[in-house]
Amino acid sequence: MYSSQPQRQQAYAPVPYSYTPTSSLAATINLDEEVKLYTTSAERDLYESLAEIYSIIVTLDAIERAYIKDSITETDYTETCGRLLKQYKSNLADDTVSSAFKDLESFKREWEIDCPRATERIRIGIPATIEHPSHTATPQGGGGAAATLVVAASELFITLLDAIQLGMVSKDQLHPLLVETIQAVNKVTSVEFENKDKIVRWLITLNQMRAAEELDENQARDFQYDMDMFDLPQLYQKPSLDVMHAVLTLLDLPPSTFDDVPSISDTNSPSIHPEGITSYLTKIISSPLSWLTSDDERETIWDIASQRLTQRSGRTAMANMTRHFTIPTSQYQKDDATIGIHEPALTEDNLGLKTWSSSYVLAKNLHILTPHIPLSKELPVLELGAGTGLVGMAAAITWQVPVVLTDLAAIVPNLARNVAGSASIVSERGGGAIAGILDWTQPEIFSPYTESHTSDTHLTTECFTSFTTTHPHPNVQTILAADPIYSPDHPPLLVNAVTSWLAPGKDARLVLAYPIREAYLPQIGDLRQRLKKAGLSVVMEGVETSRDDWAAEVEVRWSIWERSR
Image (cartoon, rainbow, N blue to C red; front, top):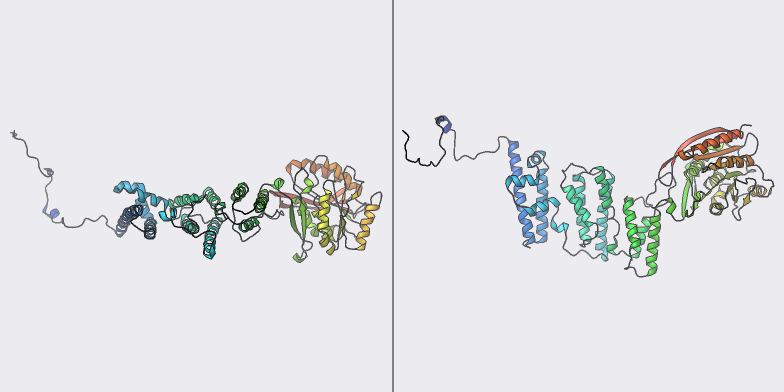
């Protein structure tokens, strides 16, 4: 029978009837023995590392609270906090520990840690005294110490940008540099200036990455763009006239000579993202520059900054410029000649006011073509559509002959200026040059331009005199034409001018160069057909790749034609 009395609650869980303790099992249990969480040394190291991380997080939270309450000095806080953050990262550098740790939020939930201040400090990755310095920085204007700090900060920015240029984009490469950089900046100024928060944001981004993890291509480009402005004196610093003038001189961008891509004139200067430079120059132009002492100083800086901006705004927006082309005149580099070419601003659609890549390709290959072109000092070389004059003056220098450079009336004044500007080197090399007007619609009429004549010898002078005074005009043995086709009307006009001036006989030559532009392929085909019908045939030709003012590759075809009948 079951008892009707209530059963008394036991103080422990009842043992199932099926379980019978054995003396052998009881003998193996020692209640005073420590229970081990691990069975191998690897497991022991893992748990010890996780315990270290736990204690670091708790300690870091306490340090943050102490700093807020001003219970610890800034120096002690910075040292202690920095050390704890390094220890935290060192522990997580191990892949096994990192895998078991997962992430900070998961670790906090698992071990029930409430530490908001430590969480934020770990997320940022640097002490609060570095993120928001409260000390008074060295005055920006004064003394060698201030200059030393500025130089140190600039060097770190240059190193940082160079690291990106060299493909050093992993966290363990960039994060230490970025920490050193912001520390150097804080020594220069404690002012919260524009763009400084970008450094902190990148510190946070890098801090949340694994040590070997790398920025992707877009991140690397964004990082460089955000950093590239810091090695230039910022307007909030109120730089002096001399400093601003020096910086704007550094940012001078020489025009391309088609063999290179435009670059900062000082090859030792840091590479700076072009969009950052544009933004920097725009800020200078829009700034009142109120700290400068006079209107003249402000106008000077605005004018130079505007020029630097136009240099980066495309060829049609650029102001007057002078390019310097180095032309080989023989197989020996010592014989190279440098020709200065002035180009006015392109205020109108006048293509002859700029130098084109096909002109440069032809000019630098003239010395190679020399054996295939019979030349004479008694007969001048004629250039049709000379533009800025690079090809004609290169021919005068390389071939040591008189050259007549011609173009339309609107082009010739600048052409004559370039002829006069190169008079010295043309004469020294034994050549001569003269500029004049020749319209292809009336090819029989040549009008020399006043004061464009330069020659070195009596023979050359006589040659020019005879050329300009003979009626009808004399024939020439060699004609040059570079990039002459821009319209369906040009092929028949050019061929008409060539046949009007080119002398008969087997020694007559037409040297032609043009870019292979898809839009003008029909006109180029038309030109070649018309030249063949006029009794000219190709002696030799080739193709060379060059660049234009927009840094795009351009294929240029050059050719030598002779009379076949």
